[in-house]
Length: 301
Image (cartoon, rainbow, N blue to C red; front, side):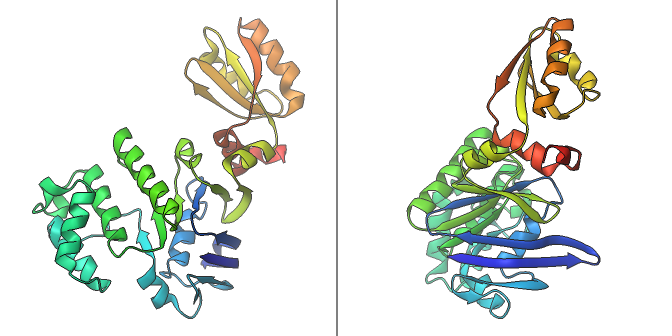
């Protein structure tokens, strides 16, 4: 459905994306993950035909990424991170207008069907600007899908949604993929990213790791140590001075530490002196992202 090679996009002297190559098959949900400023949004905007890359080549749904961007924009379903609908139009008017823009037959009927599908019935005549954050996000997603695109590009689609709504959105993405669509989603929620078929970790516009979430986690450098016991959270500041420690974060009542294997003796002494228990744990996608996306963690590579 999509294959691009060595795509580069610069803002002045800074490369937002640098030598990026991505492919997507029908039926996949592909995740772009990484720190803010890593290039996720720029990548989606280039793939959607909104921005022209400075270098590189590729095709999206059979259209040339450099020469047929208008055709790409008309064919894909793109949802931006920012609110991109008309605040003074009602929910129904926004969806009907979007359906007309995409040349959908019977736009009003399609808008009404979409309203029902996305649980927006009680807001049909509500101005989009008056919706809560969660329902505004739901309306944006509905608008992006109203023309039944086979390639769907979503920038932080669950931002502002509650747990139930996030579950519903991911269920929709999985259903669309099962029906043959291709989905690329950017997310900062690494628990959600683990639901993707494949992921790419971006750092400063470059892909530093790609594969299934399990493959990326397994291939990441470093090891994971789990400190448990009373008072372990208070050890976080002291970990910064331990040689070989790349990152740490609290997980429940425990402290999860990503470090080089050589750090183990130091961590064991720290645990013993503070009455904590130290164990090894498997690397998770969140751990891998901390290691591979953070500049302070490059010493592990």
